[in-house]
Length: 239
Length: 239
DNA sequence: TTTGCAATTATTTTCGAAATTTTATTGGGT
DNA sequence: ACCCAATAAAATTTCGAAAATAATTGCAAA
Image 1 (spheres, chains in turn red, brown, yellow, cyan):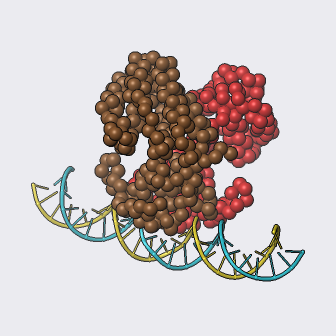
Image 2: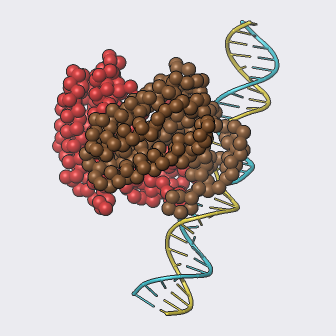
């Protein structure tokens, strides 16, 4: 916890004014995902105020929201901590994600229609045009790829007809992404993600639900395997 | 919005000290579920401060948490409103609930073991010993029944092995319960809920997953039918 | 009558100090 | 060495006023 962040209010997607609370929510979320705030780390009010230059009220609002997302754990009178990360928790997260996205993809394929198809085609196209790493020699975080990757996975399930299910899958996606970001700082193994994404995309767009789900499950399992094959000292010991 | 609520800090389940924010979170949640705070109603800070006798900071913390639960909608710079309730939203909620609880029950039956069975047996037993209404002549809200009803439904899915899935189902359960409470103030039709619960319980405890799921889906559909068959002026017009 | 703008009022959000609670330290007893 | 109580220090939570923003009202121009 060394860097300083400037206090600016985020603007909403539709251009309306945001709040400091929303702005610091995004910054905290980003720092947790990137591992700048470590799993299990205490989030002391004085240190956060210094780092993010925001007072207690907006800070606590943001932390309460992050707690609801599962990014932070909250305990009355004891404050907030960055959510822990462990092998068991990763396994549980990914199996849940596979279960729920199976439901969501089946519903999307069955009832999503041309709007869903077009969202998916565009999302895949954009992802396929974006390099995984912003440098070719070594891994360098590419925020564009991360944004489009997330959008692709959301597009896959976006035709399911339930804002609840989409929201839950989105939350699980964020949690999985955190593990991926924590791990990728340790190693960036060779992987042809574009082919994996293409196979899922084509199965989905062709209406082959079983193939899409099998591809997606394999995709997620492979991610777990890669995370666990590397240096896992960012994960807490399994209880 | 006429009643006054006393500001006391809730205590945690393990006896540790709570906070005003957690206490007012529970009160707000309860009032929203019961329809004392109406769907779509603006939650003005000055009126809430008067009603709940809590200052802005704990109040906003509670509202942010309720927004994450879907009980309240939050808009930057415009504050908070009680979440809307509509026929379409009810249908979407219940279909999502059926999807997710199907997954959770299958997993519970497949891998829940004796601990799950014993939780379920106890939960069903307690529910079956609790009258739906605290008065026999007319419907009178029985908080004990509500608590045990919720516990029974949670016990059904508690062996699925995913805290995420349990949490999502819990959230959907709360949302459905809100609709039920909003509707039951209008009418309390004759219904043998105990038989419905027993059929689900016996199928689950016997390991008949398909029967348990069919029973549960029918149970939820019947609830929707009852809600929609009554006076639905508490629901906002469908857009 | 309608529209646009400025001023006023109402509401939301934030600030930073005070109050409350937790944690760490110290000293004494067994 | 371990345990307990008291105290001090650190951290969390809350308060209520000030700052910032949205909504409403009133007036003038087209």
